[in-house]
Structure formats: C-alpha cells, structure tokens
Image (cartoon, rainbow, N blue to C red; front, side, top):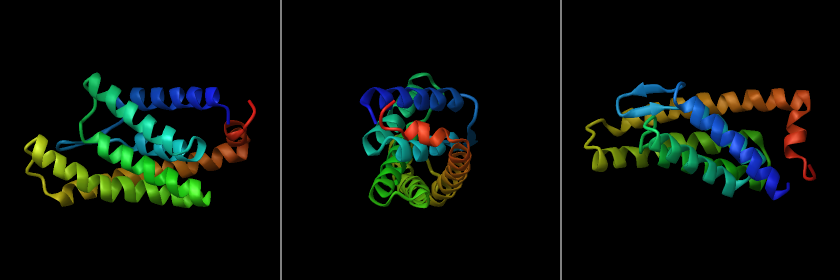
Length: 167
C-alpha cells in the first residue's frame, strides 16, 4: 500500500476516533469506555499494520486529551491493544487474532497498566477489577463491531479497495 494512502486512511480513522470520542463514550468512574477506539484499533491493525495502528491510537488519545474529552487512561489501553492486534494480524493474517489481540491487549494488559496509572497519577481507589471489567467489556464490544464492519466491507468489496496496493 502506498505511503500516501496509509496516511490518508490514518487521517480518516483518527478523525473518526476524535469526533466519536467526544460523544460516544461510557463513563465508569475515572474510566471513559470508548468502544469506537477498539473498532479503530482492529481496523488499523488489519489495514495499516503495527506502526500506523499504534500511531493512530496515540494520536486519537492525545487529541482527545488536548480537547478535554479524553482521559490519560486512554493511552495504555488503546496503544497496547493496537500493538498486539496488529502484530498478531501481521503474523497470521487472521481477523480473529486481531480481535483477540485487541481484547487481551486493551482489556487485560491495558487494564492493568491503566489501573496502576490511576492509582499513582490520579489517586484512584478503584480496584483493579473495576478497570479490568470495564476495559474487557469496552474492548470486546468495539472489537466485535470491527468484526461485523469487516464482514460488511468484505461483502461490498470496499475492504479490497481499502487494502489495494496500487491506488
């Protein structure tokens, strides 16, 4: 895929993440559950690979924080999930592994890291189980949406257009 195409697609996904993040999140204490981020992570993993997936997750989190609609806890969850999803997809090319990578990376690893961050940086007294439960639920919903969307894009032929090497 040409570099220009990857940057353009990243821009669209980042814009979707930032705009939807200001209206489509579920507040759970200090956590803002954001299923759309997980959908974007899986699609970025499949379409763009590890570098762009992690960069997209970082930039969405950064812009959301800069505009006051994000949380510092978005960084570990989104970036770790995007990395693991994209590495698994790159290695084996299976949608289910991208889903699993996002769910484990965000839901478990990101949940643990966010819990530790919240305790240290935000003085949160919420237990790790609160973080794991909410991160696992949010990432499961978002990654599931990505699987459904992937199926729709495949049926309509749009996925082939998005993945095409020579646009």
